Each structure stands twice: as structure tokens, then as C-alpha cells.
Length: 430
Ligand SMILES: Cc1cc2nc3c(=O)[nH]c(=O)nc-3n(C[C@H](O)[C@H](O)[C@H](O)COP(=O)(O)OP(=O)(O)OC[C@H]3O[C@@H](n4cnc5c(N)ncnc54)[C@H](O)[C@@H]3O)c2cc1C
Image 1 (cartoon, rainbow, N blue to C red):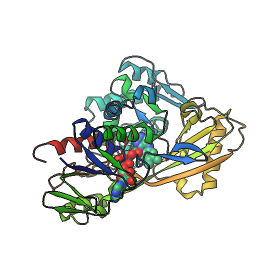
Image 2 (tube, rainbow, N blue to C red):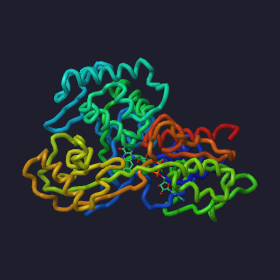
Image 3 (cartoon, rainbow, N blue to C red):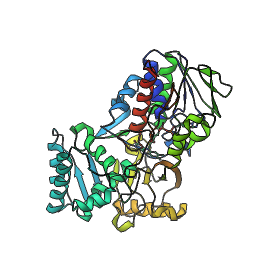
Image 4 (cartoon, protein in one colour):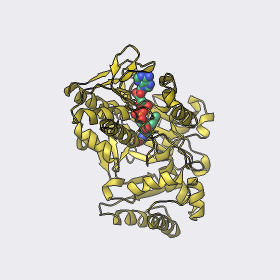
């Protein structure tokens, strides 16, 4: 079979690796020179960083499996840390190395900075989700669910809101509680290792897409960089990609906003195009601040609690402790929020003030950069409809973080969709 994949993000490269492992020669077309799409390496002041801070959790089962498959050993490339939510001087929730569910019960009961009623409310919340097997009778905004479950305001601010916004990249007033429940089911409520944080020690292009490209090449396939596909048309037995030749089968692994233009010549795709055109978008802003090399945060990743909306960043990462880039702090701001009204200087000043709250007296950063991904992910709202893997056209599958599935727009959703598209393509009926 002659198979093409358009897009070398995590979804496209997962599909390519899965097909290569099954013995197929695939050709991947990628518009950019860099592989990884929305999770990719960039250069800043002579340093290789990412387009924004990303983390994995232990629940990213398929991502870890495929990394291993292509020879990118997760044990070496990811630093595993037991669940550790720290707001320096305010709150600490840390899971001990106990088997599930004791690790979570212990983490909540021993949390520093939560009152006993808040601890019991958190345990009650998780027990209620477990009792209903993490299925809501009706999908509602997460904030509404927290209210109905009488979750104290501080618990929401320090625990549920940061986890929900980090996973769904959607403000809790709009975020789907069902999708957040799916995330909690597979992370906090699953085996202890599933709630571990996995902090990458290399950039996101080297973490998986580059080793996957080498794996594909070793099986006789190819990844063509700087090869933007303009138009796809049907021919007698498959698809024509611009002047790049004929392919029997095709996986489109582009971001949803790039899909409509690509399939303009395929009228069978109209309903899917209309479906993704209804998506709304959430940004992610990454801010890099370069301090003196001696600067260290108390933990590789620390939270910044959004007390009455006064803070800008949600998480700070110490790249010295993670990537060997001493003094470089990266901040991440997920979803829409008040930071969008600030210019770059004001944003950097606000985040520097947050760092200075943790490290009093710290001098201003030597340099800083703000990277805004305006369409980082779709807004993950209650009951939203996402297109399935299979399209009305035989031999044409979709892959990407937006394809229907249990998870919000994440690396794991992208990888799972890529694997699903590859397997669907190999079915005799496809
Ligand atoms: C700043 C930021 C931080 C994030 N943090 C996290 C995190 O901590 N954890 C997490 O799990 N997820 C995180 N995410 C989400 C995660 O990065 C995405 O869900 C995932 O990378 C999407 O992968 P994808 O393969 O579906 O799409 P994409 O990464 O968008 O890949 C699509 C690829 O298709 C290419 N392409 C598009 N059009 C064409 C064309 N016509 N021809 C050829 N190629 C084309 C693009 O160049 C791109 O490489 C973050 C996202 C951002 C932006």
C-alpha cells in the first residue's frame, strides 16, 4: 500500500510509527522544517527551548508506548516525579510512594495549607466521581459541577481549577466536566504511576517526532520537511497530493483550522469541515525569563494560585533543574484570561513579580520572550461534537488532538488518534 500522511505533529508521527511498525512504507508531508507541530523546538538566544512549556503525566500510556517503539526511551528522556502540587509558602499536595488509592488519600489528608473541611471535601469529590464511574448524567461546565458538589472556593482555586485548566486549556466556567472527569479517572484516580508528572529533559521535537522520523526511514518510509500540501483531489484508486503523486490511502493529521483549505476539492468532507468550523479556540502563552545562573525554584515545577484573578502565570518551570539551562524560568498561561489585555512588557513584569514572591529580592531577568500560540487548542466545552477517525471517503482518515475521543486536546489525545487512524486504515474495509 502506498500511504501518505499530511502533518508531522504528534498525531501524524504516531500514525507513521504505527504503520511503519506494521511493515508499511509511509510518506509524511510536513509544511515546516521542524517536526512536532504545536509541540516543537525553537531557538532563543542560542538556546533550544519549546514553543511553550509542556508536560506529560503517567497516564499518557500510548505516548509512552510509541516513544519506546521508536527507540526514544521514556526512562531516559522524561524525569518522573510523584504528584507534587506546590504553591510556595501557600500550599503543598504531594503523593507519597504508596499504592493507589492510598497515595491520593494520603496526599490530600497530609496536604499543607488545606483545612480539614477542604481535605474532606476533596476526598468526597473524588469518591462521588468514582461512585458514578466518572460518568455524568449531563455534561455541564466544570465550575458549575464544583458548585453543585459544594467544593470550597480555596480548594477549587488551588486544586481543581489548575488541574482542569492545565488539562483542558479552557476556563472552568466553560470547560466540559465530563472530559475533566475522564482525565481525573485516568490520572489521579488510577494507579499511582498514572498521576506522576513526567518532565521532558529534551525538547519536544527530539522527544518523539525526530526519533519517529528515523524509525519510519529505517522501515523504508520518508518524512518530507518543508512540503506543504496545497490541495488534495481524488483519482481512480485513491488520492492525488498536489504534484507529489498518487497515494492509495491518506491520513490527514493537520490541526483542525488547516483542514478546510486542504479538503476544498473533496465535497464528501463538507460536513466535517462545517463541524470543525464551529470550534472555538483557546490560546497558550509561554514566557521565558533568563535570570542569573544561580537562580533556582524550590521545585522544578511550581504553581501560582490565581487568587481573585490577580496572577498572570499558572505554572513556573525551572529549566535549570529540568533541561540543564540554569537560570532560565519558563511560565505558562493557559486559556483566555486577563493576561490578554497586557502588552509584553507588562506581562513579563507581572511574571517577574510572581517569581520575586517566591524568591524575594531577585534581580530583573537579563532577557525575556513571550510566545503566544493563539490557537493552541480547541475550547473543550460541554457536549461538544468532534469528528470521528473515519471520513465518508474510503481510505481517508483523520488524526489530531481534535478527533473524537475521551481526552481534551493534549499530546496523548493526538497520539491516540494517530494510532487509531493507522489501525483503521489497515482494516480490510478501509
Ligand atoms: C504552548 C502549548 C503548550 C501545550 N502544553 C501541553 C502539555 O503540557 N501537555 C499536553 O499533553 N499537551 C499540551 N499542548 C497541546 C499539544 O501540544 C497538542 O494537543 C498536540 O501537539 C497536537 O498535535 P497534533 O499532531 O494533533 O497537531 P499539530 O501539532 O498542530 O500538528 C499538525 C502538523 O501539520 C502540519 N501541517 C498543517 N498543514 C499542513 C499542510 N497543508 N501540509 C503539510 N503539513 C501541514 C503543521 O505544520 C503541524 O506540524 C500544548 C500546546 C501548546 C500550543
